[in-house]
Image 1 (tube, rainbow over the protein chains, first blue to last red):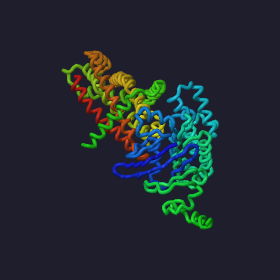
Image 2: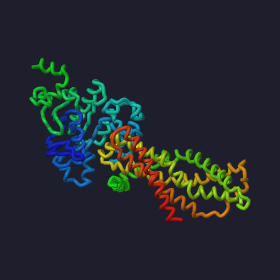
Image 3: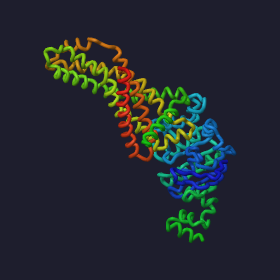
Length: 251
Length: 246
């Protein structure tokens, strides 16, 4: 479980996150939603330890990140996997080398063992016969799947996905969503997904947190999201007239 | 002034992170060999082309300026040799490599930064500064003596080639000149300078690339800054080292 306790974050005097409190449970797909610039990515990067929080704390299974020394922080990072918005695959490495990279850096596995594990992860995300290709030679959807394979290579306890569907067509988006959901349940991972894709919200959102201008405005499930009474959330969810018509029809 | 101090401070903080023990020596070695190929070996052709032409031009200009019966002709070869050893093969080659290697390093690291590849490394718990920059610095510092000595030799050969058909200079006079009054310390001086210049180019360019912020335009800007600032620092250290060593 990941607990976010009263997290504040500011950049050069500009307050980006204000008193964020949240709990993310294992085996569930936790979604953070909000408009672009609302602070979702900053929150995710704070949780991932890529940004230091201005105040507050983040606890990973009751282990406080603020209380950890550098060695402990480095160790806990090995329990995390992250899928970045653009995939962030290493351009100069092949697909297989990308997945083998964390294994080579942090395990004492032999080359054959690393290759077997990489192939297992690639098979798990349905990437076949692309081991020797470079990231530039595969599609955006494949890049995202390779990024997921790399993120799960070390059997992480925590998985973070920053807008995994951005730039993908609706069909591929659903494939990626389902993959994240399956992996979360299969390995009992605490997964946090940043998204503003309402398809993802409805398909995989076990728990949803709505961020608005750096504040947590709402928390609930995908079943509750259509009738929250929170104006900012309604404006976000029912931004198009079609969605408003759909809501009125449902009512 | 404050901005300059900020950059100098951040540069030294980055260097502290760079010069930490690599996570895996095997990976570091592999990366260094890869960088020797991409930074060093790929620079041989440009060094060859520039050195041969510069050596030739140097000899022709010396011949043109030393057309006086009381000045011995062999001084043209001697002057060409000393110019190549003392200044051209270390400083001028370093400035040219600041353009080629510096922009290459800065754009590579800058692209990795804006496409979140650096964040991906940090996320995994890898010291990205050491993993990405140390092999580049090591490779360039290890390979620069090869480029410098190669440039010296090719530059002198360029002067020799120019001696055919240049008024006031014969190949024989040129050979006498380049074999006279040789001071081995000049080679040492040039190699010491080139080692320091290689470190400056690789580290300053890495600094600009590593701290790229924004998008594609900023990667280009970082590349330009890398070339400009590494060239300025090279020229500054050229004066300091010359004062100290000669």
